[in-house]
Image (cartoon, rainbow, N blue to C red; front, side, top):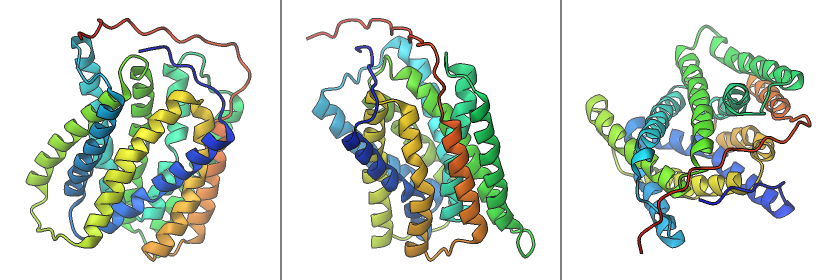
Length: 314
């Protein structure tokens, strides 16, 4: 694969990134709405199947090389396992907490990314301003968690918030790992491996742990269409395209609108009236995440070139 050349965001690309971010903000709401008709693990594998079909169509359209080479097996399996575990925590977290809480806490992914990048990405150091942003965002997390302590301890919300935080950390780890892999592996292949492994594991876990009956309804169909086709399909492909062509730090800053749009959508669609703690905590998380994405001027660090692949047979 040719060396990736990223550039600053253009106005059109920025608007596209904002639209994609708003779509992503509705994902937690779609999952929450579907949980009335099916368990979180069952919804998970249905979403993967839908997203996998969209990605497969895109791979054929772009003539992506989907062959798995021997040296790719181990990293692809590791990525698939990380993806599966992260989605388990995300779906279970949304089950126990509110959609607004889950979405606001998911924004901490950029915080975890800044911390992990300090150790695993060359030249991406954690300066004082970025560390201050992390502290501000953690303050927002504490404020959001206070909702679970009002009028006594609400164990479900506290458990859901904890699971959502773990999911955000695992998502950050997966993004850094995938960013390293995408230099030498086609993005469509990365997505299809994750969807395939996720489907296998979620089907097995659903068969073991979800014995309760489920019912098909148009609401469930709409939820799966949003999660699977719009997010797992279009959303993942669009995000990979953006991160391949533009600087990830600029994209992360635009993603900070997600908590506000998500809280408003959850209020309108699910009737989850936002508390003052949620609003205050969401703003603190956004401000902290924005500070954590700041970059000081530093020397350019050249990424190592990927190893050459064997020529494809005609």
